[in-house]
Length: 348
Ligand code: AMP
Ligand code: MG
Image 1 (cartoon, rainbow, N blue to C red):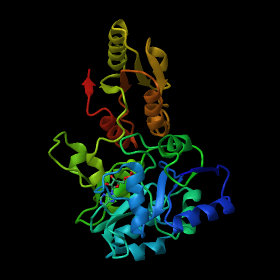
Image 2 (spheres, helix red, strand yellow):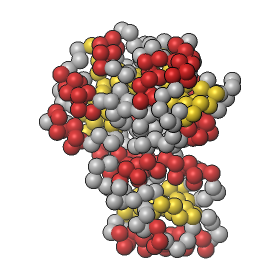
Image 3 (cartoon, rainbow, N blue to C red):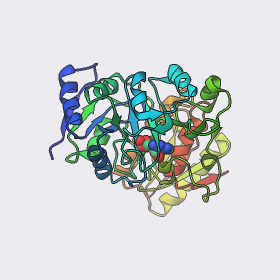
Image 4 (cartoon, helix red, strand yellow):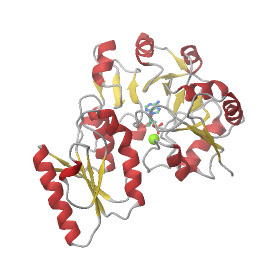
């Protein structure tokens, strides 16, 4: 299959949107920009189209897809018993990086929901995404547009690396603004529960709903506790090199990383370091990369996946990273980084 790459960095191009919408309505696959990461879209209400997503990504069939909509009224076709909390959250955060889990209607095939009786729904903030959703029939299943197990794509070239020749079209909308997947909140239980942390923090959700819980599996070290979002149990985002997170006071972290790098280099190995704009100059060896600035935490989120991809291109045997427990997005950043590190954390 030939994959067409279209550029749409300066607003909507109706002709391209029309063409991409046509591909989706005919059951094809189109990757498109969102404010979180690039999505791999298919018609969510067409079982065969949704099945193609699992095939293209190599995604386990029990890992459900998020259904993307462009208008609030669209929700009634795919969800039932919609609680008042859903409208409150939509008014506060949609369009935006928040996904809600609701009871599904019969219109949504079980292929889309990985066999679950619930459906995850999001209205993305990116205007290209919403235009495409409308053009494609209004209900677009769109997981991250990476091969399963690779870091999520935050640039169109990342999508091309994984999906060229496998999908019909890639729409290049520039770099993803947030860089981490949406916050998922489950509204089907007694108390709203965060199943995946993201840009919309627990504090922001509590500001609208009052009490909000976090899935215990996200905060516990006990690997016997299964996450409530099926996809969270997989070790996503695994880089090729062994990744270690070093946490502790600023000074000790820098000393420890320098020591580890020196040891590895003495043994003839090439290693990587993930620091920040603030600490960059304090490291003495290895391939040193700044992930962003602690003074502007979204820059850290934006660059996490692209840094992991950059290191995958290099022959480094280990990567040593600082820890990024920043105020708003710290939980989301560390959730992804700890998974990428396979829980290898060195405390100093
Ligand atoms: P991705 O689209 O690649 O960011 O992955 C979607 C995430 O949403 C996965 O972790 C899924 O397990 C989760 N998800 C999708 N639908 C549901 C649902 N109905 N209930 C719980 N989690 C869901
Ligand atoms: Mg994903």
